Image 1 (cartoon, helix red, strand yellow):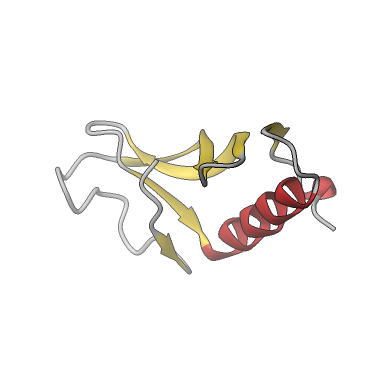
Image 2: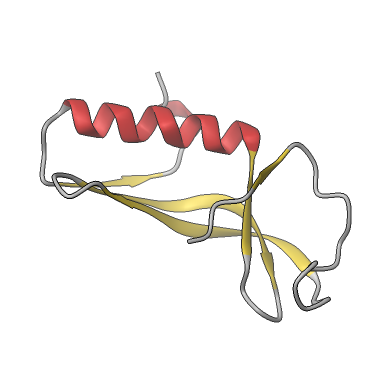
Length: 88
């Protein structure tokens, strides 16, 4: 997933292909070589034509917390469903 952050999406058209940007969910992954974190159902804006993905700043902050908590557990693989209730 390409991680692009922004406070608000200014246009409903993709800047790469001019396709329509739509609200959706994606699977976000982080692999630091020691831990693989997979976060399903992450809220995002996705281009309906080329598939480019954007996440909001608030979602990015939540993802950072979720990834940090997963790494603190010292597991090799952590699969999480995105839910703000899971964020401390």
